[in-house]
Length: 335
Ligand code: GZL
Image (cartoon, rainbow, N blue to C red; front, side, top):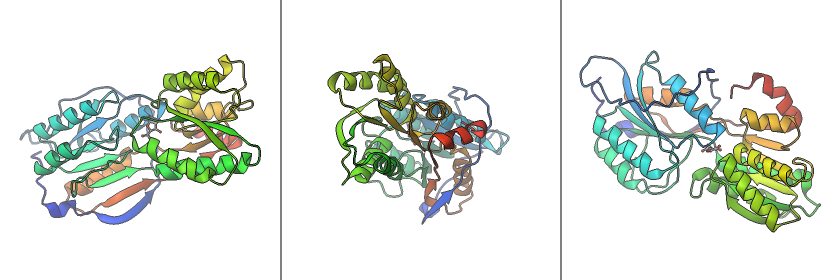
């Protein structure tokens, strides 16, 4: 399909925010292909060529997010998807996006590993007339009309829900709190920290240490080992994702303590391993961050290619779970 040219007017996006429940995804395991993609240069196929740059494969959430995108942007659904895994490196995402520009993709989509440093490549995509869609994470940019839409959760709200539950449960007990932060400079790490801190303000919960575990299980384990060496009075761990919380569980158990009892744990994501640990009482509360963004991404791409206006911000709906909620939700969980 010849690449769709875009007048700036087609970048015009409604300023309204749309709350969308997200579809389920199939159980197909994510593949790791990085197809050569690109519009077919006249082979006559009527597919929409999409270049997608993914953060990496750092967590269970990321795997579910990749699965949702690959399961939705299929040929039978009208897409020719080129997918690349940046191994959590911004330079890899920037070079992948430049490749997609050179290949003349109809649309480029990506989940930016960090918030800043995208102006040049966003300007290049705009100059090439290729619309950009952000999924999962936001960017800070000075480029006008840099992207058509941002589809993802409200991370400040997620951090606030975690902090509100902690305040409800533990205020008045002089709890000492440690925080396992996500990737430094990423929107979820910045916003979840802000939301949680705001929610515990005015309570007697005290944040005594905070460090990045880079959203990985190993990172969470290593940082928690350091916290346990440095502090003998930790009551609560706030982990920015399940994977770091699961790593913290390993460190807590290796120290001869009981996660969920001696040291409480609150995490964000709601992936199967996290929900299982919650049902088993090793995690105390999880705020969901729905990774199933494929259907909304497909809809935004189709509307954009058709020249229809799309919402500038599409906020995905998240639930939250205590132990009973996790037991009830696990049997039907899609990820
Ligand atoms: C959130 C997403 C975060 C998840 C982590 O939308 O960007 O990145 O919370 C993942 O599990 O690594």
